[in-house]
Length: 333
Image (tube, rainbow, N blue to C red):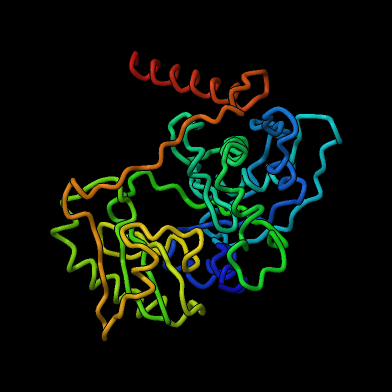
């Protein structure tokens, strides 16, 4: 694998060519000071201080529907005073606030390649749904998987020249509460041919997939041939898709072949030796409940048990209290 193949899978690289068949996304270049904040584990687990007066802040997006759904903002030079926690990133916070508003009020955040899925436990609803900069910062600081992007993105590259990309980007993706996990699939492309498809959520058996398997296969093959094959320049890669209720296919992500990418219901050895004749594609789903794969058990890391004022757990407990009060009020009303 080469660095250029890994780089093509960064969301700020592939999204401009696939935005019309993807989820609406706004992308911001992150200041180096924020990257250093994410990497700093020398002190307590602190969240950035919000510098925005939410009530007084004017809405600078006059017509969100006319906003371009791809924009890369230059990183700012916000720097917190050395040794003076907690930090703040006012320019970045403002840009993120405006983007969240333009995307309907809730987003799914990720870095160049990865999303902080392993830190969903720290959010009130145990999801990656974010409505503010502080919620994004909390998920990112609590995530171990983002260390891949920050420090190890090129570890499997034969021509590795650095440990990290020159710039990091925050992708804010519109949050859809009604997405069905059984309609997510990972597609495997070798020598620019679609050779394998796997159910993305392998911890649950979905009987409906047995009924729809043949139709889904034809739909995914047509999508690959019409929208992906000629546009994505790598020879070997994977891409994730979602199929909507009205059978539209949406690209969710691109990933390198092998390395840190999970093969799901395949093994990489199998994929390396599949001989696809003609248009034959190996499509794997869970055929019964006995085939269900165990999920990753995510426990609360010991490092995050600091409950002092301003800590990650302090913010988490405050969010949980607010959510409980909201639910109690609604129930009483």
